[in-house]
Length: 170
Image (cartoon, rainbow, N blue to C red; front, top):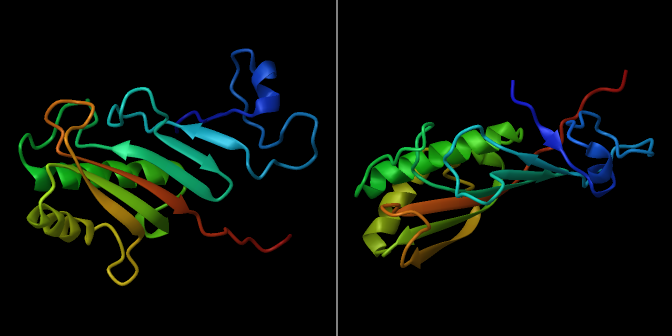
């Protein structure tokens, strides 16, 4: 499995280089429901300088995912359909790390270089393979001049709400 690092304001000074595995804020009896977890997919497919995934309670924030493969190579140069598919696969992977799925996504933002209406129709078609058709997430589609790495045509970020995990009390 992956090592997750859990950082809290109170725990930062006590961290001293060791990963916290406890769900509790030091000195408290109860887990802090809004303790931020900073998660990394282990893949170089996000945008440098940003945490890939931040989870606070049931809310999961995923940074912009782009069409880079597990080795950080561009997938589908010049091919918006191929880049959309790879970026959404990377988004799905990032959500899974935080215990979420594409069906849990409440809001999505799609950034497309030099967006045209035909591009949006194609992105919707690819997206329908990842998101529920009857209940797609809320969101916005933005045409942009460029993205932080040459040859990227699309980036997609998301906010997901993980459904409560009900367990019978013992």
